[in-house]
Image (cartoon, rainbow, N blue to C red; front, top):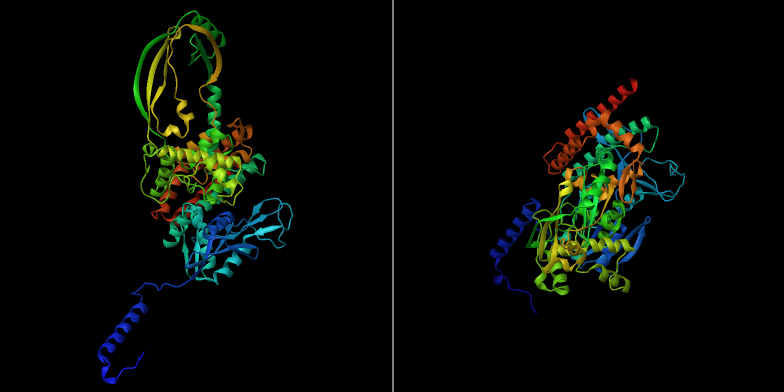
Length: 634
């Protein structure tokens, strides 16, 4: 082919015009007026998450990854087609406030400036203790072991890797703690790579990861500020109050805090309410097999015994009876608080254990993010429910509901239309691979989450219901009985027949009395861990990420015992709470705690002044210390 042209055939005007247009185009690019980027054939990306399990799970979405170690840090390398991902984990937070004698409890306050001082996090591989102070000899200050895991090593490894790649993606958890981890990683890597972006995903699935990569964002600095304020508050208020109770009660392991103390107060108050609410109940057995339980205000044993004898010689009456049809709608899907309540009530295991199990299920890619107070279900979630319900029960039982609007967060739901029994079968057969050892408790928690979610997307149950009022003339008492006589139309009950069977009841048919007994009862039962979680949510104390931690601390510090899943305050817990309430009540009251929580939410929205909040906390902490010095001098 001949590419040569004769001179007279050349159109110099059009060539000149094209050159001028190209010059203008280049000029606009240099001025930043044109931002469209050239697609590159292959980009290398350092993809950072918190958990090694999560890193391994994500890597295996894209085929069998190649692995290598750098400074002891595990790396997984995979290709997405146009990106080469190097996936690794920070193992959680990499920096925390120093505990060294710097500034005011690790925060420098000077000339109107407030500067938190951070250090790398160390963990002793021998005793398991975690600390942040600098080590000249790299030995554990608790047991003397030199087997120390220092996040410094991970930081150096990440900095070396950041220099080798085109981009850095930070995919830490989608909450304020995850945002803070992302921010510190960003600061540490920024000198080595300027192209650092935040990934946000609420489930560990291939589609969610790819979608996050297509929707990169900047770090939310307001969420970071909120986390810093919370951490500084925990350090200033927590350290000062903890040191005070340690000095007062001569026990170094004691602690106090803005949320911990009012929650301890609920448990203490309920304990004494229970003691003061002792009374007798009457148990009336009828000849048709029905049992009527009546609570009285009677506290005298002789009196209740006499009344029981009188009732035995009398008869109860049916005052009224009615029937009606009623539809029972399913409950919304689970959020953090309701998941902890339900699992604690059913499985009788601690809420901190439940939270760890949920973390494992999330990292294994089996459920959506478990720290949430949103009941919203996405279209993806609704489709998962539709697939399962239509195959298992029939499409006529599907009734898709979003349960909420707006926001990125969803309720806790499964990521696949697979129930617990099928999940176990698939994992044991090797059909589905997960990188966490799942125990029976893992399957049990997954089962609770799965059933509640599927029920939330099903049709209501229609029942024929009765209401009956039974009168006991001898004590002028009325008892209302109600229940389902029969199920007229099935719906969400098909997922768990036990729940609807609890409503099945029969009315009294024979009012003759067979026997009358009495027993001691209490108007106010002790709180369970699930009760405390619900109170924290209702009263705006704490957050989804801290519910389980607060409950755990109360038992760990020896303030509360768990007896048969009930929380019982011990003498030390009662004394510590009364001391704090009587001397520092304005600082640890429920109202003050809730007020600060509301301010934190406003700060996350960028509507509260970050430095003013820190200065207010500083002044409050000085007041606490000053008050304690005054108390000691009296």
